[in-house]
Amino acid sequence: MSYPKAVVFDLDYTLWPCWCDTHLRPPIMPHASGRSITDSAGMQLEFYRDVESIIHELRENGVLLIAASRTAAPKLAKEILTYLKVTDPATGQKVSSIQMFDTLQWGQGTKINHIKKACATLDISWKEHSLILFDDESRNKDVRKINVQFAHVPDWDKGLTRSIFDRVLQEWRENNRQGGMKSASSD
Ligand SMILES: [Mg+2]
Image: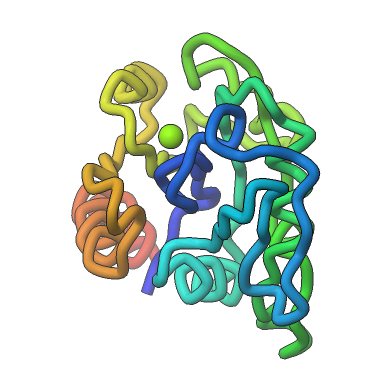
């Protein structure tokens, strides 16, 4: 099965159910399990249910992972990614989820800029490789202008789900089938 060169994730309401810059009251504390964090007001936060298995699948298949967020609190977002743990497919060990990301991009404005910066950092081209952005905000669909497939994550209760992920990946495979068939027939 083919996979994109890189997958881009928004954070707030795509990977976890809050705006970390407005809903969380620092300092935050990790839970010993690595599955959640608690803020100073007692609010608990964890990844949406299917996020870990999706990260796992992408890493297992050599896909580069990019985070692209407009949050006003990147330091806090990094702390959340440090405290929330996932299983690294390379070792089978639980590691900070931040280690599963190849680059983290922050800032206001269009995510075209986040993605261009990420591609420069990773030395890949958005022109040659078709990437996917998963994001709850449909205004970010402007990334289509640079050939990035936009995948809307519409439900704040469920966030990024396995069914959205599988459907989008299937669409990506169909859109990119021509390239795959060409290379197969030239063998
Ligand atoms: Mg968001």
